[in-house]
Amino acid sequence: MPKTTHYQKTKSSYSSIGYILYAAIIGIIITFLFLLFCAWLFTITRLSPWVAVPLSTAAVCIGSFVSGYILAQKLNKNGLFCGLCFGIFYFTLYLLAALLNKQFDYTAFACIKLVCYTLSGCIGGFCGILFNEHAARKRHLH
Image (cartoon, rainbow, N blue to C red; front, side, top):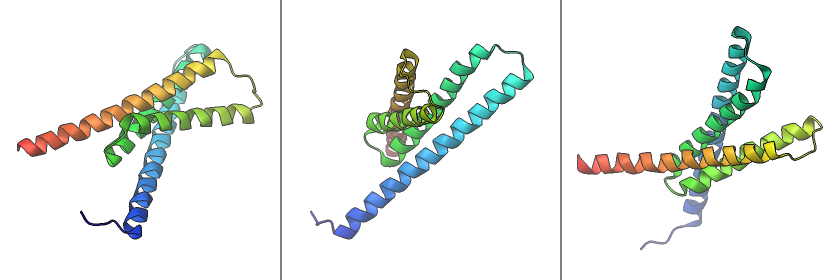
């Protein structure tokens, strides 16, 4: 088995960082588009203001799912861990936004958001790995 050089190791780590940034940017864009859709929906219809919180949570969950899916598909390993990391990343953004808004209390609702974000990211990472395996089997059979 040939030895891997330092250049090959750094090249693969740079490509991993690139994949992480790519997945994060795409996930943030998807989240922004869904939040924009929710805002449009609120201006068109007369939805109750209480619907805003679950819709915004769902939008962030979709972004977390997409980020975990893309990263797991690009790396082709550790899908659950990739999704978990993105779920925690989105929750950290949520906490930073709350701190900037001077809300320092950690409520049960924040805990529910943590669970939702991490689960959606993990499911996205799992689906990314499943899609890669399905495509590899399809290529192998044909």
